[in-house]
Length: 337
Image (cartoon, rainbow, N blue to C red; front, side, top):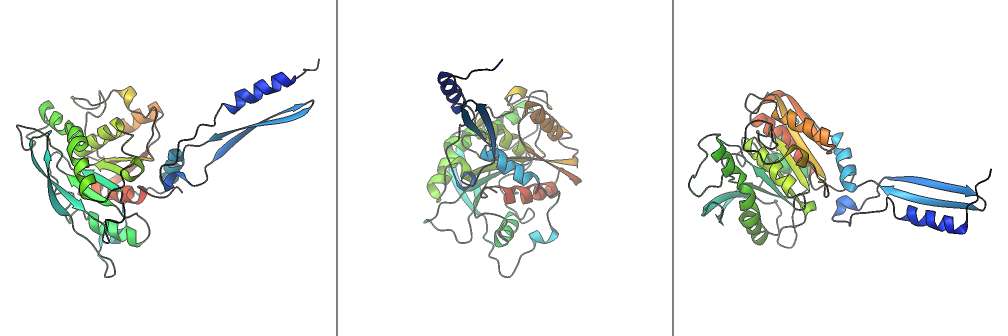
């Protein structure tokens, strides 16, 4: 028996197909303007011959992460932290802003590009310290952010950017972290309010900054990694690039000790996904143990695309921070591959 396809049936089929798989996010930056991978489905009938085509577009964020997954390096090249005669290395400068969350003047270190000018808007990277440190440790020569970043820029392997290392312990009554009990963790968790209400407005008004998510990144180490994940998952509309190295416990319920910041089912991006989510874990980490591996497992179970970087030769130390930053600095703010 032959199936008869009427004109009305063809019109209905075309209407249904035209509404499927064609949603595209508006371009936000160069990361979204390159040609995108498409999957094409074709339906053909034989009396009369009619061809209907629907196109499914791969999200630019997925393409971006797919590319950089192939570029992860376990450790950085040895010479990336060596200064060169033909490269300029600016220094971090100390600034102060008023934190309404902590009710005090708070220090923050800012690294500007070597050729910084107000006539250009720059992307911004926020890097968050661990529980036993402050804003100065990540800005120190031991970590070598300025040396590594400017060598990468000179090699064409990183973009110019502003780097911010803030003080993330926010309490009206306690100026410094005194332990890893629930109250101290809550004080770290309050940095999300300080960042949104005070620090980011200060950076945005003081420097020439590109303010959209495609030009804003955050990462951190240990307690700072806990906070960078908490902040990044809470505000994907603000941060297009999210990282963490040896993140501490409590980002997700049942991983480590409370207080927890997110439920396991919320460890995902139901609407706006980032261009990059990079978690770095050290196999010999005697501080956060296997928590980063547990975060990786939950993200995988949730179907949340991310990059997982395992370091087999370092622990909960500055070496892991450098290896993570080497990857993260190369991956953020880059044009769509």
